[in-house]
Length: 134
Image (cartoon, rainbow, N blue to C red; front, side, top):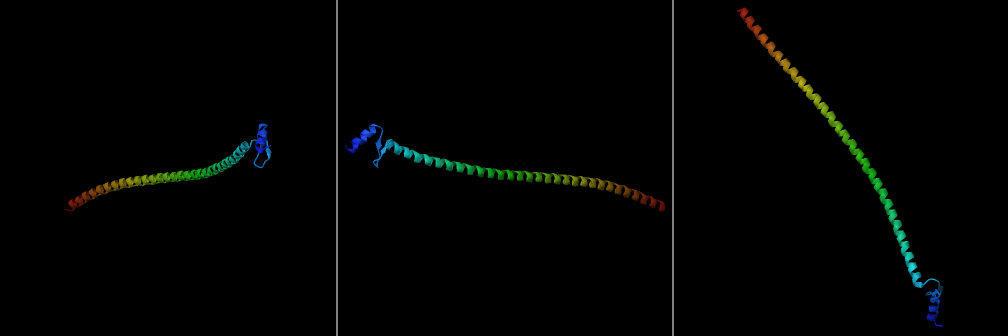
């Protein structure tokens, strides 16, 4: 019997002959398609594993970066708080000095008024003495 007739009879019964003249239960086209599908599936699984690895690395880096940002944010808040406290302290010192200046001006005014009053008294006494001496 010729080989093609034998192949047809076998294929009608669900058996197939491959390139190596081995009898197979699966159609060679289906076997090739299955093999191609397996190779593509393996590539897909490898790609998914690579994607999962990249996602994990990205997540770790994002977490590290967020921790750095959080630390810097807390440091910035601390610096801002110290700056505000320093400004408040400066304002309090400034106000205290301004009050002291006002007090000193009032004392100076009072002393100047006293001096003027005493000078008038002295002039009056000098005039009185001159009148008594004359």
